[in-house]
Image (cartoon, rainbow, N blue to C red; front, side, top):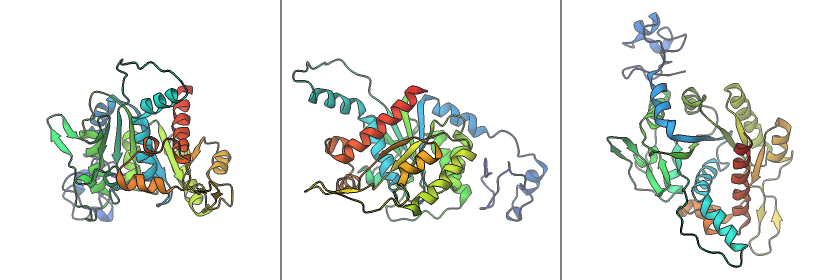
Length: 336
């Protein structure tokens, strides 16, 4: 794995930790080839200790995965982050709806602090989904400062640093270097209750970098799928990846699970679960099923305008689904 790659290394550097360091064909012509081959560049990666120190303020770290693109992984990442950031408010509103008289408590409640980290470097859609397009990340003497969607939800994405239509044409080592920088150099404040990490589809360099640096402290993965078999096949690979890399699986979320007509409330199966969908796969693999999110135009609108479905449409079927997902996650952690 390409860890601790020297700044002047060749683009396809295998990394000084690799058994092929200094010997692989990609090492030819590299100024570090001889020192890598001798083992001089091997040793503990100094970034591991720095990252552990930076993220010591984080209580829970969640990585959101999908086997295939287009299943709504970034949608789940953003709406999950918004739900966690507004959870106290959502629960309070629910309680008040069931109480005829509710004395307003002006006592200050502790607010949940949430961070959202975008490591989908070639498809950084989070700034758009959060309505933060055009914002900039800033640097201070404490480190890189996130862009804030609201006071208790900060976001880090390469999308803040490039033009909206500019492609990111990078090989593995350069991607890995930026992810390490995001993990090591971001100042999240004195306390962060949740860090949600949005990843690209599949199991590529970005995932390996996250595993290399966080696998000892990662609380687990949420895997997103759609009901049809073509998506579930790739989810099986994602489950196998998590098991081989020892990432705990928090559960499966099935997105685009049926369409409920907003007029007549009739449910139609647009993407039919021919083999039982995410729920059946979760049962087969012994993994928690966190919930099913319907195909809903309100979700599309929320992602286009940077809104939270749970606060904008609190009584919708989609909002109920996201609430159930958060409740299942919280219950999972409480059990542990």
